[in-house]
Image (cartoon, rainbow, N blue to C red):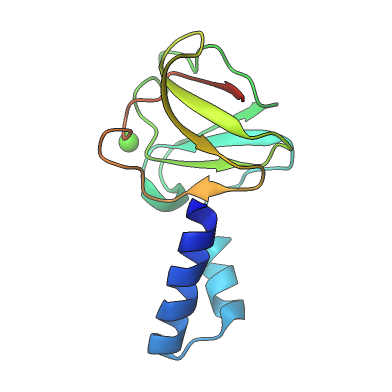
Length: 119
Ligand SMILES: [Ca+2]
């Protein structure tokens, strides 16, 4: 859902700025690297800052280094992934579809993620 919205926003921005979709795609790929099968958390919005890449859709605790730090996420697993405020999948925040991302989290979700899992 959010991905579709973002794509629409990018298309609108491209129409306004006169850039091609190919250029927009290049900009999207400027996110910090994330590989197929991984969930990547980023310290800042739009895939910037420190990265935490975890293989598979389930992580019961992102660890002290990344706890309450993520500001954008990219889900390259084949599962919808739900993100949680506390360890062990407690305190639902939001979900991301397979292949989807959130470039700018809602204020209530920002710097809150502690665990995530397939849902
Ligand atoms: Ca952050």
